Image (tube, rainbow, N blue to C red; front, side, top):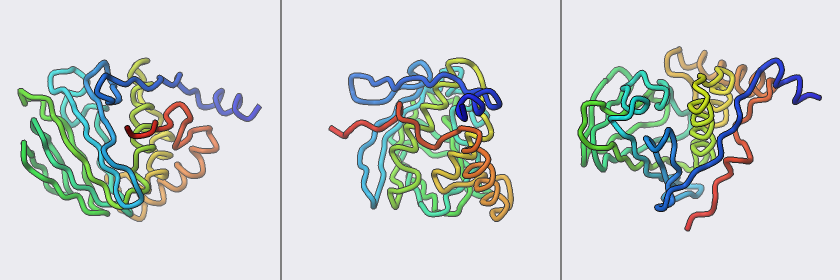
Length: 212
């Protein structure tokens, strides 16, 4: 009964199943994005991802819903190594671009986002190393992009409450507000209201499969 009421008040889209290619990558947005976990333990989560700059969805620049909005992580730092292509990014007040061989350091608490440069001739390939490995981890990434894929297939935006639940689940917060307000927003709308509305930070259909 509770689930019926939650879905009646806050309609959900059907969850799209995970799709893997022959290389073990999870594939999204009609093949325009894919990712694969490299390492996952308490100390580090590392994964490789690839974006197409020519696809209308992933190649739409910073405004594309294929990329995370401006945000920060309360407990984790990220290192991003560009393997191929060109990535645009925001780090606090700095807006820049990075190319093959460049390494970006995103310390915890620093506001940031990124996007595939649509003027690049090559697919964007990056390797992320996130430390420590709990919070923004394999389960979080698989669920976040699983939900994005589900909404992509029905051409609907992701619910604000679902986004806030993901922020809370990953110990993150929106980057467009003062930090204390952003953290409070993630708690109130993510941990409390969003979960009461039936949104989750982890869905069984997106349970990570063992590394090979």
